[in-house]
Length: 620
Image (cartoon, rainbow, N blue to C red):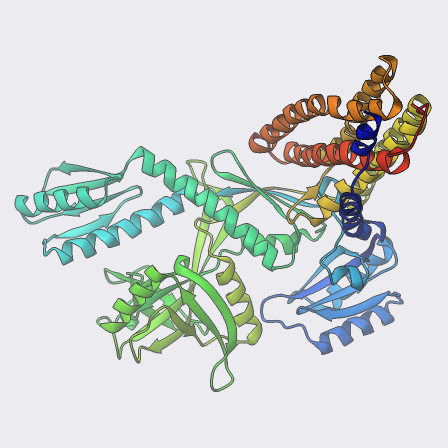
């Protein structure tokens, strides 16, 4: 019997090596958190500007003239990163560089990790810190739902016209209202045919007949709610993509209520730069140039029916057909480049639906001019009588070109002023056009000093909790308490390593609370195991038998207790927001790692030290 138990208390060499390799792997990816960060100034190009070696030389000259010592000045990914020795020097450098470069450049203060190159080469980096720890900017944004509904109405009105023409059903007019479409017909027969056809093709719209051979199509309540939900959801995705592409790491972008979005940008202290990123609502619209009316007889307040009045960069007016051939929401990729004459251009690729529209539209308009219109929504900082935010729609023509051949899913836009403008336009189009305009209704800046204070206090809580638990376990369980303490240290290393490896994982102040809680919970499993071993010894079993049965008997209890806690953490993550999610993430990771270290890691150590040996007494 003793021989059998001794064999059971031996851990195979491959398993021991695998356990050590797993912990070593997590320790490797936790290492970047030991190196700290440098206060830094990050310089990026704005509209009509470009970052190059000359810009870097100018920055170095500015720093030298201002008697500011920098650790390094590096040009990388079309951005300049200036590392500085302390926070006061960082602020001085930002002011000096901003004054020298002007408004065409964005100068933001940030923190640059000191991770060695050999760790960066394997993708290792420090944990991402949340707004409450790193500092940064917080925005509460409101979505203009009226614009989203209006766009949906415009789209369905255009689809109604196309459907009626294809089925050869005559109509007098199709007029767009705020949330409905009004169709007028010449005869009752045409109205009936149209109603049957449109009802069949558009089940989420409600059709009602009105006096004067008119048919009104209005969104169903379900369709209206879906339109609003889609506007919020797609705007969240687009904002997140846009911020990521502009170099802001790990933003928090969440829905709040029916029409609002919370955006948190950790590490960013430049509110103006963040606003520029988030408020950009650029998109494109392709219109055919109207050739039946004279633009000299029109003005912004007086345009012929079915046309719009738009000016180009030089202020030259054009009359364009109101019907949009292609909207920016069909764009799936956009890259800047140059044409055969070396002039800046943007190469655009659209989805299958957009490709079909371009193919149809250009096929019947070969030899005619087509205008590319750049559309922006500028918030007016005021509300209308209904309490809704007011926006100004600004349009300008960036190019007018004659359609030479039928186009498909790929085409290019020329007529841009500079390579920088082409890059900015490509970036915004690639990140996506906002489905509905947004406006910042609340903004807060959290300073890095407050974040550092939170970090210091959180680290003190973790360290004190860690030390007290270590002391208790060592005092109460002696040799086995030392093993539990090693497991506790390994558990902390694994939590930090896994948090550093997971893309999108952000450590917040509640997350640090989750780690403190995990420190206490991590020894629970060892307490259960050690107390069970003591019981087995009191029942007269030998030390080897007590170790074997102690681990095996406690396993089911430990598993049940941790699974229930894990389920609670999953529910918190699913239904919680912001801080609650941060707490639940560290709690879930801590539960998994504590089970690994408390059961597998400690048993491997105990078996390595005591397994297969004749012992008469345990230090427990």
